Each structure stands twice: as C-alpha cells, then as structure tokens.
Image 1 (cartoon, rainbow, N blue to C red):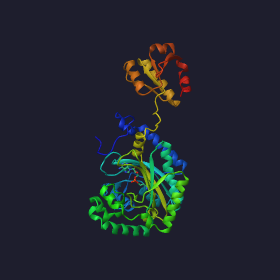
Image 2: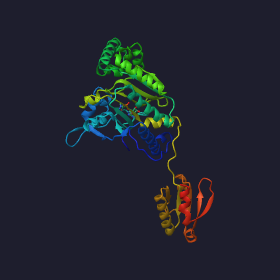
Image 3: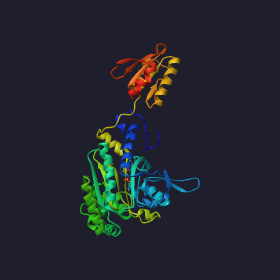
Image 4: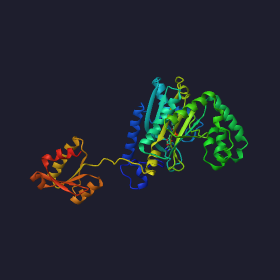
Length: 422
Ligand code: HAM
C-alpha cells in the first residue's frame, strides 16, 4: 500500500468518484496549462524536487504552517538537511539568484509538491501545482497579467462558479501598523479565540484573520481592516489592480481577511475559490512578493506569482461535469488466429504505428471472443480477425465496432484505407 495522503495516477479508475485521477485527464489539463502559459509569454523552468532546508525556512518563512509543521525534511548521507519542496516559488527565486536571471522574466512550472498535512478531501501529502512567477516589474499590470492567465486557464477548461478574492497586505510600515492594531484588538478577545488562533496570536497574528473556526470569525467581526492601514502607494497600487481586473472582465470580491499562508507576500494577494469543493475550496492563489529575491541574496527585484493545485482543479472539473477529451483509442484492433496470422498482424500493426496510427493486437492467443472484448474495452474503432484463410485470400473483413458493419478490404490496400480514416 502507498503511504497515507498520496496516490497513483492510473489510466482508468474503477470508482467513478475517483475518475479525476485518470491520467488522460491530467494530460489534458497539463496541455491546457502549458499552452496558456505560452500564450502569455511564460517559459518553463524545472527546479529540483528537493532543496536545502534553509531555502524554505528563509523563503516561505518559519512562522508559516508549511515550514513549522508540514515539511518533509531529512538528512542526506553527508548530514545536510534537505527538504522535499512544499511549494515552487522559493526554488524558482533561488534559481533566479543562482543563475543571475535578473532581466524581467516570466517562468512557469508544473510538478509535485510535498506537505505533511492531515489528509482529507482535496488535501494530499503529495499534490501537484502549476505555478507562474513574473519577475522585474512593480506595476499593477504584472499582478493583473498573472491573475488573468490563471482565470484564462480556468475559463478554457470550462470551470464555472469560481470567485476571485483579492486583498492588499500593503507594504512594510503599513503592515506593521496593522499588525499592531490587530494585536491591540485581539488582546481584549483572547479568551474567545480558538486554541490554534491563540498560538498564532504570538507567532503569526495575521493568519488568525483567515481562520475558519466560528468562534474566531465572531471575534473578528469588529476587528480593524487591513485596507484602512494601506500606505498611499499601496492604496494606489490596489486601486489600479482592481481597475485593470474590471477592464479585463474579471469579476472579483475584495476580502480584507484574505492573508494567505506563506510569509513572503506584500501588496496584492488573491485566491480563487471553487464552490464545489467543500472545506479545501481554494483551487489557486498567489500574490506579490517584492522582497523575496533580495531576502534570498539577490537584487531588490519586484515579483508576482501564483500556483494552482492540479488535484483540486480536476476535482472541480469533475464536480461540474465539464468536458474532457476522450483518451486516445486504437483505430484498429487485430485478433490473430494462429502463428502466421500473428506475425502478419504484428507486421501490419507496426507499419500502421510508423504512420502515426494507434493500432493494437491481441497477443493472448485466446479465442476470438476474448479479443473482441479487449477491443471493445479499449474502445477500438475497427477490428480485424485474421486467420489462415484471410492470409491465403489476401483480404480481411474490417469490422466497425460501433455499427457492427463490415467491409472486405485487400491486405495490400489495408494500410492506405486505414490511413484515410486516421
Ligand atoms: P498555496 O496556496 O500554498 O500557494 O498553494 C497553491 C495551490 O496548491 C492551492 O491553491 C491548492 O490548490 C494547492 N494545494 C496546496 N496544498 C495542497 C494540498 N496539501 N493538497 C492539494 N492541493 C494543495 C503556494 O504554494 C504559492 N507558492 C503560490 C505562489 C506562487 N505565490 C506566489 N507565487
């Protein structure tokens, strides 16, 4: 059995509620993501699955849940502390600093991330993200371009009922004064806060804002709003982001309690929520992180990015019954009877494949009925039963599986005939 919270991606799932795991759905989703990234000018970057632990401690922040509770950390044989990446942004910024990729740049990535969380619907210990990071511009267009890319992907996939939530965390000084005000407010409500929020009160007070506990939510009703503490430049930035989003036709909801779970953000943060997904309803999110590259030893470059979880997108797609293209099925399936027919079928299948046709044959040596069942299960369009007689006469019956109609075709002309139908 595989460890808790991880799963295999198989061509076919036996349980219909697990259909979102089927590999052809992942391939389709990945293709839509890749091609959309290309349209928006983002190039692929692939960073390693593990990094030095200190990268995530510095990058994501040690007061975040990810770093303090959820990392898969191990010592390698050289006694160095390594961590399976819990997210992609820190690694991409590390690569940018290491390779001095300091010109304005736009990167995307796709791959597994690892977080030791309590598994539940939509929450896994290995999950997959598609992420995009744009580096080099402090202007609001950079925020909106990335949000637009994510929304474009969801729209292309046919997802509906999504809400884009946005907020601004402001910049250094305004955030500090807001945290102070929140501290003062919550000091008088400490007794009503949940246990987890009481821990966060001293460790990471902002995270109390997005607590889902009813008692916390009630407590927060009269709390100060971060938007009242923004500096002039942050306020201006946020207004422009909202203006541009409206111009792009992206409907959004301002949520002053949205703070996100990673420590590197400033100014704009956003999250896309799907109403089909229950508790783990955030399918994507991100924001601006202007100080991170500097913090990791590079120059002071502004940046904005997001990531979306492939599992949650696939689950939302399944929940909304949106379209998935059919997995590729054989155009033709051969059922050979006897050694000579087996060789001839093998040769024909190989020739067809060389011409780019999906072709299969039954190598089991079992009866015709078995071959027909396999052809049907594989959703083959045509089927050919080939025995000694067919080889002697130089012709076969090409049977269309769905209509059950047959047509006699010469062995010589078979490849051409099938290529026309490719
Ligand atoms: P994040 O919100 O932690 O952001 O993760 C991004 C997305 O990954 C989430 O919206 C969710 O869909 C998915 N996800 C996260 N954890 C799990 C899990 N345990 N199981 C299933 N899906 C999960 C980041 O990781 C940031 N690096 C995003 C970013 C990029 N910000 C700026 N640039």
